[in-house]
Picture (cartoon, rainbow, N blue to C red):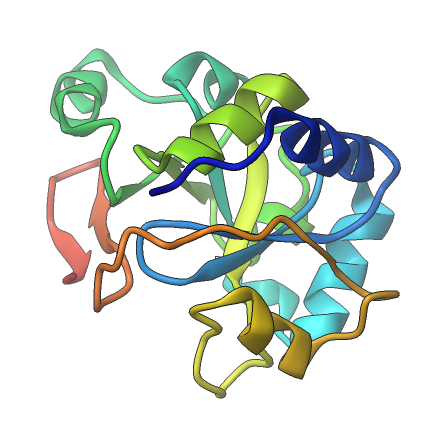
Length: 187
């Protein structure tokens, strides 16, 4: 179902390394992403989406080791978070002091997820790190659920598409606060 040729995963990883914005399938919708350490790419992504920086962004990864440099969780938080992954579950975790405002927004925390989606898993492994993940749409519009829908929102010059199938979840992923386990957005 969610198999894509490995050369396409390599091409998507190369696009990330070159500072491009890519679109890719996730658990429920297509995501827009880029290298989280490339400020120009992240700011371009925010501009394309017309998303205010103060809201912050989500980072996704194939395993927690790719996210750990960005966050500063306590042992109690890790005991709460780690058993829930990989899965369509996002946690808001205290960010490291160096994490830029374009990632965390007006918050002192960062939203993170270890995805179970096979294409996201392969992409993050090939890229060698976490990537930004936000829904592939203009803010306040319906998120794209297919490569065709992404192309209806964004041009080929703006976004490189890694086509594949979503996991067919109907709602965006649930978001929880790592400090107390409170649900911030239900699935």
